[in-house]
Structure formats: structure tokens, C-alpha cells
Image (tube, rainbow, N blue to C red; front, top):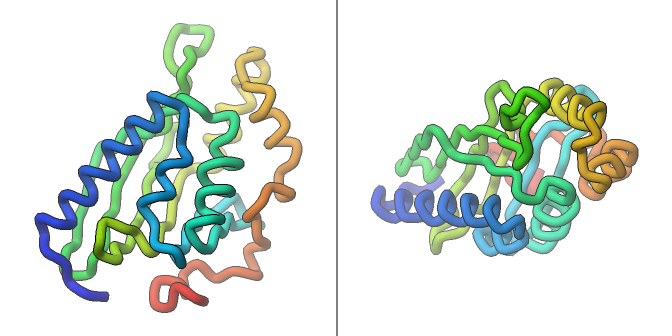
Length: 186
């Protein structure tokens, strides 16, 4: 992985975080796919049996920012820590997951636990690789509480029922995300 100028990487992260904040405010996540190379890889874990895998900007736009964010419009993911490694061309961002509505106690729903994204920078203000991590158990508990309180969107209820039938969901034994650290085509 090549080294990149520190100021370029900082500008990339600033652009990314600003676009993330705007997407949460507007509820329109699809423009986030403009930050990826044509052949980028974007993954995250969906529990003990499943991985989410999107290969290429088109799948990232359609699967990560359209179907996976459907029902989560106006959720916000504010970054609370930014770690940039300009020598490796990597960025690690830690974020929170906040719902746009309050629980019965008047506190915004939040998926607790550590959430974050690990990126590989490709230059030209594009990511070539991303791995998200978050607590799927806490996410399920929050969505369950929202459903019990009749506050979970209809679309999120549909998605929860669909489970592994969502686009991009891949059996864990069929995808080794760790191998993509060395070879993104793995």
C-alpha cells in the first residue's frame, strides 16, 4: 500500500465526514458511492453466519447505500474519532449510530457498542476498500425495542424479515474478509 500526503488524506476524511453528516441530515445516502473507485470492495459482518459484500461502485450504491440504508433514512453516524495512517493509506473512523426518534423516555435510540469503518485510500479522493464493524446484537435489540414500541419503520420491519435474502448477504464461509486486507480480489 502506498504512502499518501498527510494533507490529502486529511482532506479526504474531511470530505467523507461532511458527506456522511449531510446524508444523515437529508436521508439521501446514494451520493456516498461517489467516494469509491469503480472496483472498490465494501464489507461488514452480519452475525455468526453472514457477511455483507459489495464489489464495485454500482453494488456499493445499490446495496450498501440503497437497500441496506432503506428504513434508516435520517439516522446519523457522527464520527467521534479519526485515525489516519498516511504511510499505509488507511483511515479508521469510530462513529455512533443514532436514530432520528426518541425512545419512550425521551432519549434518542442509539445502537451502543463500538461502531466504525476501516478504509483504504486509493488516491484521487476515492476509497478502494472499506470494512465496517458494529455490534449486531445491540442493533437487533434496538430494532426490537423500536418494533415493540411501534416506532420501527415499515421498511426496516420488512428488511428484518428478509434477513439473509437481502442483496449482498454472503455466507461467512464463502467470503474471507481478512484475506482482502492483502488482496482486495480475494
